[in-house]
Image (cartoon, rainbow, N blue to C red; front, side, top):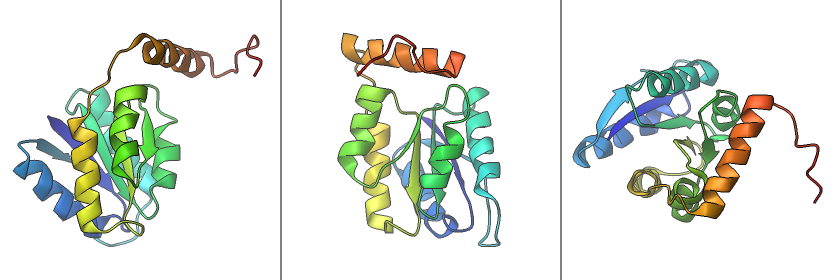
Length: 156
């Protein structure tokens, strides 16, 4: 699988380990930067990963920043990108299986290199189930993305 990977300066120290793991797992990484610990703005690298996916140069993306939160917020602003911070393997695979997650956001200041590799493995090994309930929910998410408005008929 082609996997776009990007990071800011806080995620950079873990990027080499993720790149090595991708290659060892038979995946083809698309390195979207950054290439040092010099301070940069994570939205620039989120955008580069998303563009690689939208251009079909990659099927999935992995973004490393300090906490993963800012990267997830930025990534989810881009139509067609479904990103989440995952710091446990259940969320990493379940997010793909149920929510068709296509970008994994990780906190370089939160998890260590061993956990990062487990999370990436769980994320890339999972597939969307396509079950009716999940497909129905994904259609509603697509509608939110298109209209950028809540559903007037929704009442909890």
